[in-house]
Length: 106
Image 1: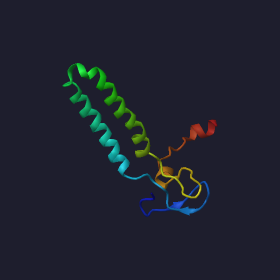
Image 2: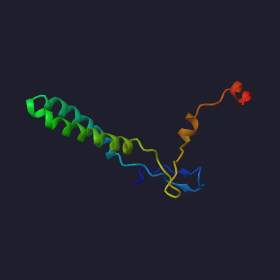
Image 3: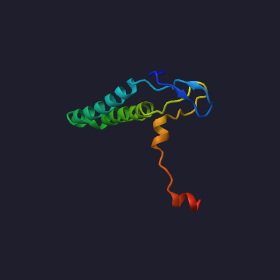
């Protein structure tokens, strides 16, 4: 499950670890779910009166796949030692700096 060799120190447990990331196949599954939903919508119009019964089955089926696939594809890396969110150096740099006015007001 751990992809990549870039490790670091977990800020929660202070251990040097390689963070666990979800498989890249989840992004493929997410794309396949979106493509399948669009294809199903396009093909359901050819069913005529049978669409009343089969459309909800197909649409809710694909919509049911989108939520878990999106959750897994966009999951944050976690520390294998403590299981908490693994904060990378890019996350620390990306954090917005507080302005001097806001810091003085607080």
